[in-house]
Structures are given as C-alpha cells and as structure tokens.
Figure (cartoon, rainbow, N blue to C red):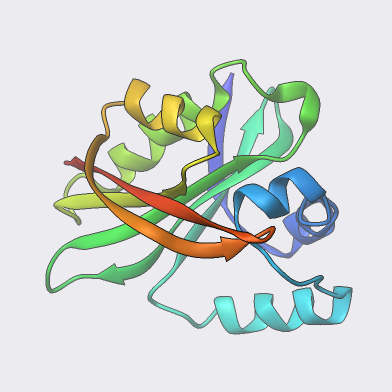
Length: 160
C-alpha cells in the first residue's frame, strides 16, 4: 500500500543516500555533490519555506522516495512538482503514480495547475507523467548544457 507523509527529519538519512546516486543526480540535473552538513542546512531552510511542500513516499510502511511541490504560487494557484523513487527495488511498481494521486488529491482545492520540467533523456519520468494525466505544454530547446552537449527540457502540466 502506498501512502505519503509530510517530510521530516526522520527522512533525511535515506534521502541523503538517494541523492548520492549518480543516475538520480543526472535525471534531476544535480551538478554538484552535497555534504551531509549542506543537506541538514537545506532542511532547516525548507522547514520555514512556504513555497515548498515535500512528502515522503511509503510503500508498505517503508520510506521509498519523495514527492513535492516547489515555487508554490497561491495567487496564480500553480506549482512545480518533482518526484523520485529512491529505493532501486521499488521502481517500476506504480508507486510514483499512486503517490501523485495522493498529492494531487491533497492540493485539488488549493491549486489549479501543477507542472513538471523533465530533461529529454529521462524517458521513465516522461512516460510516468503522461500515464498519470499530465500533458506536454512546451519544450525549452537546448536549455541545459551537460556532458558536452545541450539537452532540451519538456514541460508537462495537469489541471486540478
């Protein structure tokens, strides 16, 4: 069974380990390594940031990933979203889809639109966003320079 819970200090250790994974860093376009101290400092800032909302994803009471919103704009009622399943053994089981169903239900009355920016080579994320009802809104051509070449960013969105 999939559930989500507000992100808290108890989720930091696993999250830090997941953020060290080279594939996850590449998919999220993280270009620098983060120390444990930096990670703790980020959490302290996050706790007071009204523009973000993060949830831990649980599968059978085991923390397997995180999902969240950033750049929450309550005037325009929109926000950018992101998700990752950090536990490698839990990928491809529909957990992200269910976590998004829970997140969207949580924000249905608060937001009008949720959007995601996905790098062109992250095919698993593109497939997942389409599967849960997000539609492509546009392409930011040659937006990111990495690995000696440019990559485009796709913008997907869903209306609540």
